[in-house]
Image (cartoon, rainbow, N blue to C red; front, side):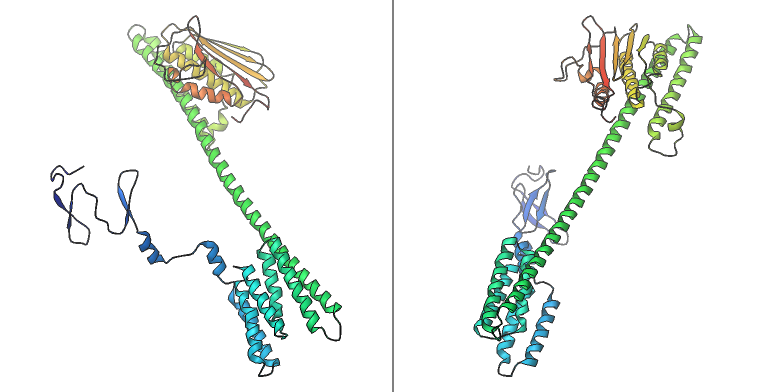
Length: 457
């Protein structure tokens, strides 16, 4: 948009740090300074260096494959081998043979500098120099460069390239034995050279296989490390979710009970002081119970927290105390536990306790006075069935969107229903919460205690 003070088309100065101010027209793009302009997600313009200028600054670099092919291997071994071979040539050759022998030695040895970057090209150069040597009928100790080149091809190229290079060296051995075998002894040197060629190919192939195996091990170790990091992050996320769910249930329930007790105390403070005192004492007891539950839930994060060991996790046995607190808060609650729960794991009992606690808290918060609640727990060898019903009417809320049939809209019970559904799903159960045909509300789920239905809580 144009500046309101200057208007479109009017010139205003643009100041730059360390430069004289210059002028441009408002509403028009800035002049091209040889740099590309990018707009970020926040709408601010950022400048990127011009590709040509960046290339001039850093230099044009070829692709990695080309750089690897052009980069020589460690120079010192090849140059040391060349020096030793030239000294041997200088010590054993006549002066008129020295230039030719030195040139052929250098042609055979210098390509070894690229034995790691471009092994096949290097092998072709060495083989060509060896063929020229054979044509010139010159025997040189630098022929060992053929074996070095063959090993490099077998170690850094595929199997087919190694076989082709081995066949070329074997053909060269045959030609060398045909021309330079002395005294008609052809078979022995040919067999020796053949064995040397086979051993060189085997050693190079073994080096390539070992390097590939080590690379696979490194890749697998890196993958395992990434998986461990991901599992650690998932474990942290799950623990945070669990603690948040526990804190929600503890705080929501106890605050709801305390609010109900406080309202009752305010209403009866003039008519019945004794009942007011009892309600306030119950508020204090509920607050202390909330603090104990919070310390117990967070105590597992600290090894030196004594409350985690002094107070066990709430379970089915503590449902009677929960029902008493709800009755004191003004919600008549009837509890019926069928079957023995001694075999039910502690985590499953905690899930049952939290489900009942959340359902009764929702009833206390969202139903009028005079509502009755009925809690029924049925324990069997493999399942625990939880049913919580009440006869109170919920306020009519707008439908927040699609939800599973028979389930309550998520807005009908705050954030408690999703947490109850997650707790139930941890033991293979499907939570159903919704209105009853004759009025009231019902929450139903069945927890599976066997290893097939249970999931980590």
